[in-house]
Length: 90
Image 1 (tube, one colour):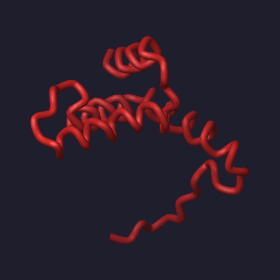
Image 2 (tube, rainbow, N blue to C red):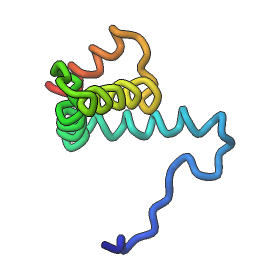
Image 3 (cartoon, rainbow, N blue to C red):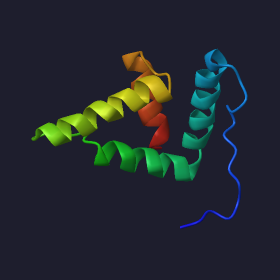
């Protein structure tokens, strides 16, 4: 499938030390939208974040969900993570 528009990443052209906070803010803004909340909930559900993994594959998916929360969203504190999850599911 060809995407008809040229996509520009908001962090493109910034030095590496600025790219992470810019990408984190971009994702946080998206996850504050209704579509973002739906996506975030489905993403976490599909990656066994709310369930106990039963296979090594499920554990790998759960580990990636934790990585996404920690590295992509910049949430490291358990209270901050819980707050973000609650905010994403009004």
